[in-house]
Image (cartoon, rainbow over all chains, first blue to last red; front, side, top):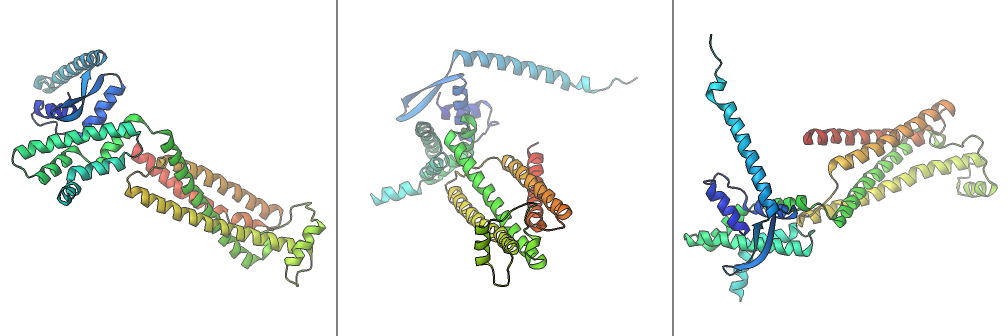
Length: 91
Length: 266
């Protein structure tokens, strides 16, 4: 995916919740590339020269770990926020 | 051809890409070229989406630029990502050094003005004196007496007059040079800010250096001045105590700024 496709997908899949400054995607992608999580190559797409990014195996593993961590964190927060846990037991 | 040139010069995307080149001028050429290609493709893709919905071209381009975010923010994020290149670091150190040296030299000039006031009130011996056991050579004496007014007949007095004058005028000259330094710094700063790539060391670094230098100079000259008052019956005290308050006030100002910097980043 190229940068514009990434930011568009991010906006669409979050139903418009992640409406970030679109340019901020590029430093983020470049940082991921520096860290070896994505690789890139230049391609001609729809008449324009674009840098297309691809998840590397290392990036894929890192994504799995972070996804697992995130779900675990969300599950913990859900447990804390359950209404029953917030209501003190009355005598 | 003219219509095409005008249309290009009015294009919000072209104007934005120009700003991006200026904001990222310190980057390596290839990095800059690649980022510009990405930004250019992104902005035109985005503008074309709006144009497909019937938005006029200029408005669509302006919308795309607004959604992309300020060029300065993108440049800052890129700088943060890849660190500061060595030549930028050198430029930061040189700019900060010129600022600190300029302020230091102006402070020296201010101490010269105070020393001139002390000499006017207390005479040359309040500003300069012979050190204990100091021997004046006949050739120096001849030179000092030649420069001194005819009313001065002793070598000692002529020497003290000369040293007191040096303590004042050399410091005033340093103050003028410091002022020139600061004017040059201000000019370079405003010129670079227009090109959006002004770089100096973080304020907490320069403030720490300034507090240390001014504080040490202030305490040292204060000690020498008090020593002159106690051990030399006050002779030559003005040379040191003209500098101490200026240095201590400067240390206080930079110290206050440093505390402010540290609080704001804590």
